[in-house]
Length: 359
Image (cartoon, rainbow, N blue to C red; front, side):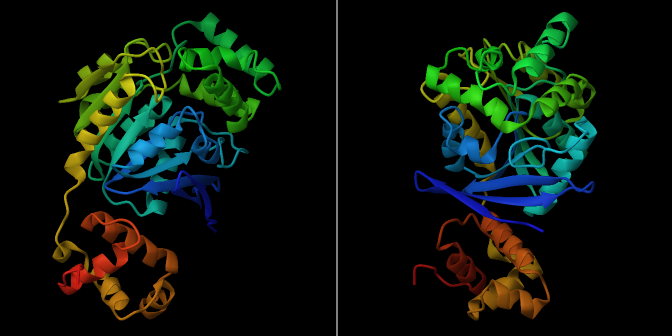
């Protein structure tokens, strides 16, 4: 069973949906923007609704949504996804991503792996090269994060999570905030402090961190075949040194080092427009508009029924499909034809009929 929610800000709408994994865990995912599809595998701290109002993340959503149809999700145990979970392994996270892709109806798309989501993005690109058009790794790593090789420091981090994650005051959480965005304003830091306890509970934070530090996908990097862009902040303290290592290990990867100390780039720093322009330019190759005769037989059939004036429910009834399946076909048509907005349906119908949509 799926539910749909909508949150509106700055005249931009995101659509939030839910799906279930093969072990019954509910995952939340969202879609917004227009253009070629971009699937974001984000860091462990996420909340689809909370991030939408964020002084730390909102510029990512706004600017990426201008050049792509952005699909993002909360991992199991976080955000709007189900919190009562036990398995945070890489294998489980990859299986969740595979389930999510099927739920979205995406066929071929770019993948952006951010921070601790990068290993999952790498594993997916290696397992499904036919679906990944291009790969972006930002602030990523191929193994555990900041304290992976320092057992004493990692024990201290876990102790701080246990002691302070759920406390009203942010004393212990501010340590993580300072690592992620050292050059942030107090407002931005306060939001990141609150995101931590909003995004998940103490038990999930501990178990997820332990599982992430067991991850190692370095052996997968040489097998990546998708065109790859690696972006990394020069002074990143969460994933220090990983940018050049990732780019060196992935065949043909391009590396862009960003002049920043922030693991999460902020909207008003000079590195942000560099990131934005690099990603937009890299995704531009996916903006290939295919002719209408490249649509599948089913997609053409649905458009012809739409030309008769049938709505989605009537089309579903005529073809013995679910309404959700019809919606998915329309979404794929829009992506293939490079259409978006309120006139996308009419324009797609005109294309399949060989008409000029301008009348």
